[in-house]
Length: 107
Image 1 (cartoon, rainbow, N blue to C red):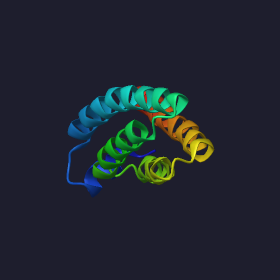
Image 2: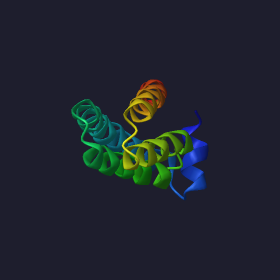
Image 3: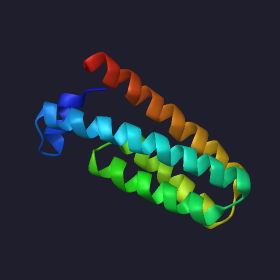
Image 4: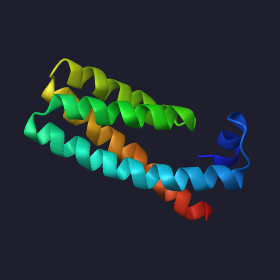
């Protein structure tokens, strides 16, 4: 993952972008926790809102894999499709973990 390239694509210096990525990681980790709890409870409205939040934040940072996965969750939750929502949430968490690992190596 090339954070410098992503930063340039949205008009930030790498240092500024890395600060935003750090905030994104902590916020998204919390949102994924809320998302998983909501899925386990069958609370698709909360799951949809959490996915929408993740989608917006990741889109604004150019993190298209996460944005696309969050979009899948948002639509699956809207349709109350528990299995698809859960599978996509696991995939979303995997993408976030990849970003976390890259973030750690760039610090």
